Amino acid sequence: MKTILSIALVLLALYLVSEAHAVQVKVQEGDFVFSLESVKKLQELTESSSVNGKQNPRLTSTSFASVCANPSLPQEFMPLCMQRGASMSLSRLATVPIDICEICAFVACTGC
Image (cartoon, rainbow, N blue to C red; front, top):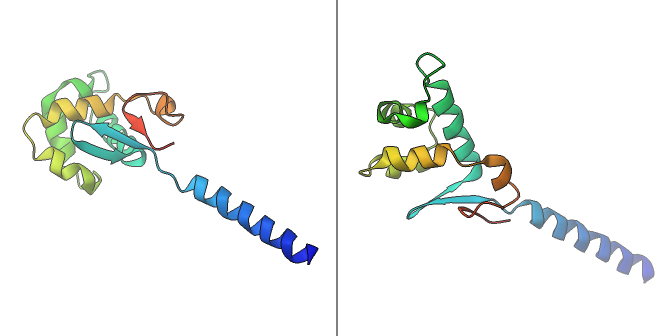
């Protein structure tokens, strides 16, 4: 009986640990909510779309238009890209501090 109880406790502990890792961090921008992984991808795209490497693509609306047209952009950004003022929202998302967001110390990040 002790063996069965011990196995049950170990299985319960493994289940609880696996559930803790399943929680996803979400980043909110206005009425939109995006996964942290998608925001990371957006940041990679904005950094790679820099024309000459010196210009900050996060500050120009034309670079965000090209980011929205990029097929690598996660689909969850498409409704935002269709909104008026999308470049401002995308620029804010592109500057979210990911390292702080991963520990949920940033107000726009939830889900830890």
